[in-house]
Image (tube, rainbow, N blue to C red; front, side, top):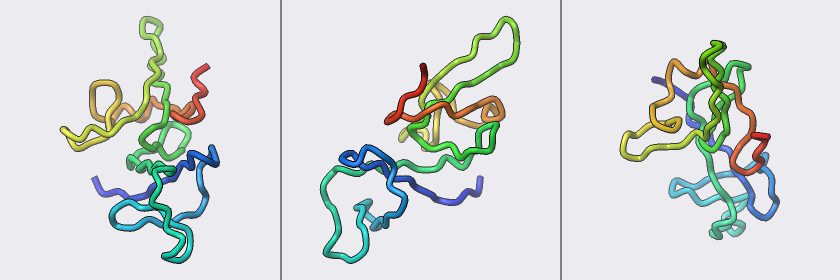
Length: 116
């Protein structure tokens, strides 16, 4: 699958996603000049999976998604998108993301949990 490599950045102190940031090749986040590089672990990077949910929103690792089956005998499931280093891919609870994305809707993320 060809996909753009896109990250979003969560600021632990700011308690929100940072709109503009730069990232070094080793994952350090900085804003502007090199002397402003922040080597403290106060920023969390999350990568775009390459998939869009059923409403066209980009799905990132750390997103909480609802999978709807639209079948009377199947309950919707809610889970967090995660990177599996052993399989080298983005996963739901136990299988790689793929065709299931047509049934997914982003309902929150691990920082702003809106499962309720």
